[in-house]
Amino acid sequence: MFIRIDKLQVEMPLPNEPDPSAAAAVNELMGGRFGELTTLNTYMFQSFNFKQREKLKPFYALIANIAAEELGHIELVGAAVNGLLNGIQPKGDAAFADSFGTATMAGPMYHINGGHGVLPMSAMGQPWRGDYIFNSGNLVLDLLHNFFLENGARTAKLRVYEMTKNPAARRMLGYLFTRGGVHAHAYALALEKLTGVDMKKMLPIPNIEGKTIPESLPFMAEGMHRRLYRFSTDDYREMGAIWRGEALDGSGPLEITDGPPTGGPQYQQEGVASAFIPDYAPEEILEIAQKLYAKAVG
Image 1 (cartoon, one colour):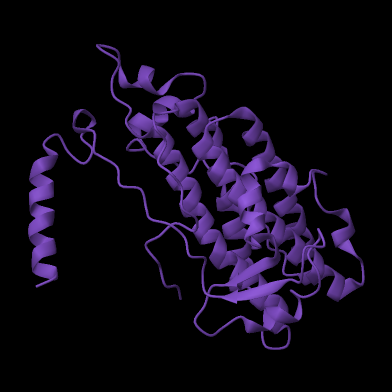
Image 2 (tube, rainbow, N blue to C red):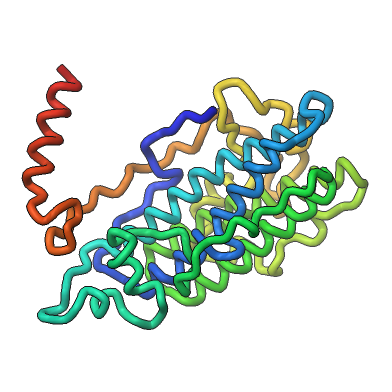
């Protein structure tokens, strides 16, 4: 089961103005082949179907715990796209689609089907596919795929990073670079425990150190590249048998932190009455919501 915390995993400033091109690029990290929906669901289904959990507890704990963190990554990418679309209004008499841009198929989709927010699709508007999930049941093969998946995701993030200079998008990417590096390192260590092969010698893939990405530096300074968060009240401690040793950059020992990151607040965004979001006369909905809230708190 899960406990949901109404915060983002990292504090992100709301963009100063809409940037639909950046939003479309970042949406690839939600619903693309190597997006967060793929990492989340791959690890989640592997944890659902894991056999001999008690006998192989450290490996099960690692996969299940990383799956829980990926739920927060989904939320973070969603918030980034929503922030980049925030404030879009029709340009004079032009249609809303023109306001979103037509460089990719994603533009009109945000208005027609997305409520001016993130969608489970790629940058080109293609729906996320369930067959992106990989779960063979073979532990070595699944871990090897997870190692590949994290490095494929890192490559995609680096390419999205090159496509936008939007500071809000790049801050989110800096965080995900750091955390994805942790997951790749963790799966490398798990494979080493099982096979004796030192997979971590292959890292980082692509061969670009995190310290060369300015937006990653604040998170590395906090030690987030050495830290696995334990997303549970009392479970998954066994992953400590795998996550041990030194950081890849030699900055210190690997560590496990009980509980989630401190995080930051959710975005507070205004509605778009002319697009019926939340409706044409939103003040009526707000009045109803305020009455319900007053009753709830007594």
